[in-house]
Image 1 (cartoon, rainbow, N blue to C red):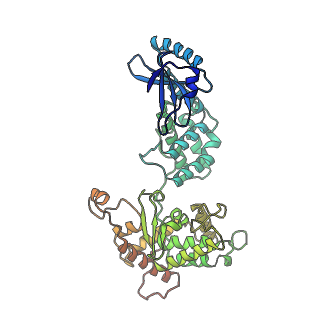
Image 2: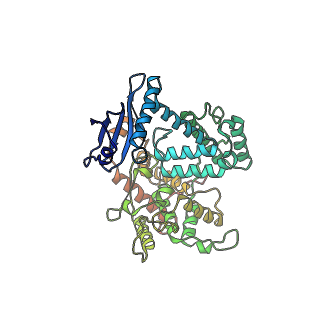
Image 3: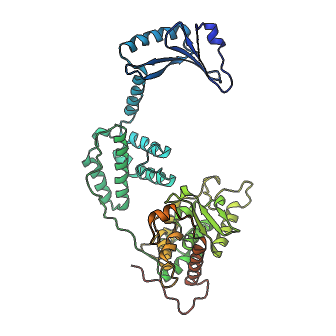
Length: 446
């Protein structure tokens, strides 16, 4: 930094050294500085102290568009205001904040700002960044249920009865769990609005959820598992409600089989990436950002699962010059995206409807296998079962702090034995392996 009486020629000639910034104080106008970057960008800056003695910087403009004379005149004007107690830098920040607040006028504006803040990590309701799949799900809920009814309303017009009326309409339409999710998203969005001083009260708090949501307990019986597995292998033999054969691509069929064999969540299976797999070691490492517990999860792969994954990779790669990055690439993603979890849900719905299997989902496969692991049929400990499922809360009877901070074990061998035992039992149930006469069936579905 140097003091110099600036002239137009000196402003033009001013250059900064590579990797450095040049700042010149103009002795012809107190507090006026010329700032020059090593890229050649030149700007006028006013440096001053406000009435509290705090040092401030205030950009007057670009030196290419504002002449030296104009910069000196503006510096002189602001100097007089500052001496009367003004603080132009603080006023500029306040104006930007007020402008941002004016931009968020409606519920649709709020949802845009909320979704953006969640995606960037600026807003973390539970002190952790939301996963991409969570953001996508919340956005879909907002598009379907919130924006049509509330989107155009000014924030100040949204009161508690407004939110309740929307939720009541959803219940009247027979919408259950998504009503509660809609309620939660509105509540979170208005919590964000309060934090940003956009509203003074949250219209989605102070009343209970409208839908009495109970945890699912549905499991497949042995007969249902065999029926579903057969349908996955030969879907064309099934007829839908329209009388036409059920259409099910082999990649999605394999993904459903892997959901049954590996007991991982449908989204984790659908998003399986080649980079996550070590088929020679028969392991699959799901990255932390794809896991609900935000921790990486290594899944040992039993033999049939390895064979199915290899088949899926061959189908995905085909004759492509640039093989896709995913085991189950989306047909509309050019190999750059995986299929979505909903693809497995829709496929399972079509199959179970044609098979006349009532009230079953993809996730029920995970619960069924989990139940079998700890049953007398397989005798796996609940602790190892939790490790297989990728749950992060089971401490195995020890202190939580020990499990969280002092146990880095993956229990890979124990998980492998558990999943290989489950694979053997499942293949016996579906008729691909001979069943011993002493095997007991999974309890009837509740």
